[in-house]
Length: 318
Image 1 (tube, rainbow, N blue to C red):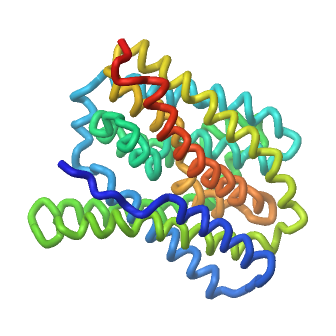
Image 2: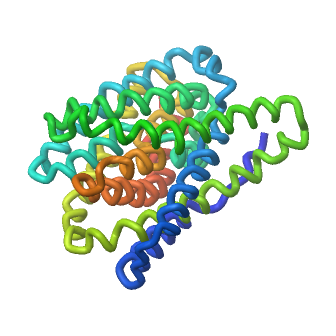
């Protein structure tokens, strides 16, 4: 089946630039902006989730070696790497917690497109995506509390419950209902392509609104974000060989190895963004900006991965 190419993820970079400039030069403190921000985030989550095969979780069982490799990367390798990187900024709890939240969350938004373009077997990992998506809502905050060494406490998590329910779970239920309808209606099935096309532009708008709302309150702290930039780049550099190693140990095919390398490096900044905003912003106000910093670098990193992964795992590899 021919895959329709969606809008370039470069739109997200434009959203980051536009939102940052608005936050610095045209700050707008308004409940309207806050409302638009949350509405855009809910729509963003809906569009991301509707593109996942929520009704096909059983597909993951069909290729257990891929499933094992993918879960090993996300539940063992990534937490170890994230913990080591987080210790570099442990003196600044907001940076440490933001880094852990976004790196521990499996990617569900951007990496699949890159894996397809790099010749990866996307179908082999699609079935596991709903499982990773559901698991990160519970496991990632708990992992962050544990790996942050107490910087983030269990007492910080209750405010996130309402956001998880309203901004993530509710759109997910709506997406599930729509997917059920698509199996019975040709008209609804045709809407999936249009919804997928809208995903990246809506992510860009949501990120821009968050930055417009958040940046004015943290102008003096923006320089702190430079400290996590090399750490996020290091993560992308490390995950390529580690993902390849996981694929080799699991005896995966060449397309499956490529998919594991790219999908393993992709992170869940899109889903963690609303959760980070739900934390007490008087204490953790810099965390959403850390998440957006990672998302920005991931967009750039996925462009690089699209080029280098086929070189690292050529078609004639044995």
